[in-house]
Length: 438
Image (tube, rainbow, N blue to C red; front, side, top):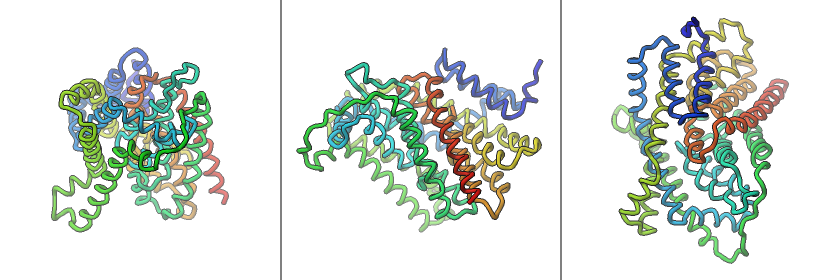
């Protein structure tokens, strides 16, 4: 009998991912996640009581509770936008400018992606759904194509844009100054865009918008997207406000502020979505009975159960110290430094599914291995590989919730995403070599 306790860490992680993929073919994704959680716990020499205790800790963590609230509000807001026709008006406003529906489908999630909104891909998903809708079956995008367009272009900014917490933490930890690192990452952002166009967008049939001569004023075109603009404006304002308050009043003076500041992204986005939702209810004069109907139709509970299991999955991986075991194994096997610098962030990203997670877990080891006199190529390699790992992670919240939204097949999704990741990996290796030679 094979003793799973003796398995290398990388085998344990791969086994968990395979369980998720295989079970998701026949059962809801929650079943696959639950089986992977149990496998990871037992393979780390933990009993069922420990798994339950760790799981409950992460289910009821502060950030998790904020996330549940955000997802509920996003689902309700999206349903109201659809029911009132506002979603169609948002897409039509872009059709006044662009004649190709595929371009609109890229622009909408990309705009949302400029901001580090938790679960932002779920917010842009209905817009992509509407943008790529067509009455002609031959020009209709598949659920997998819609999902990948929304998911990939929503995150294309994340390996370069300095507003993301993962990038902020990386800049804080690394020895390379921001004015060097950010421009060095820019080619990888363009690679993500080019890859998305080549491998996904070009496969979707061209569909012309119902563009009409531009007779409306810019204000008229702006009106349909005002709830989205309001959401973004409040989100940015609250982030800036909390930063200022935190600077003026140090944490030791206001203990409540410390907790709020740590969850500032979640808090700011929750309040912003709530404000946008209330504005829309007031603007459209929506009754309480309509709101109740919308809440029931939004199917909040199945998605919440999935998010809870994702939180447990990520938490078990962290609490079981599998990443620490992986680091030790790489060092013991005498794997070349360059491969460790690329592989550790990639695995951390695939395990955690969050940029700030792979940076926090892998960068302390990675940075200790980087030559001080030639660090730029290595930090570019480390962050880019972590990003690519994050994009293939089954623990990535945006991947899971948008897969469910579009009712897309998980293996078909990975068939497309792996092509995108493979292309970006080749570009990453090329950029690393160029920077190394220069």
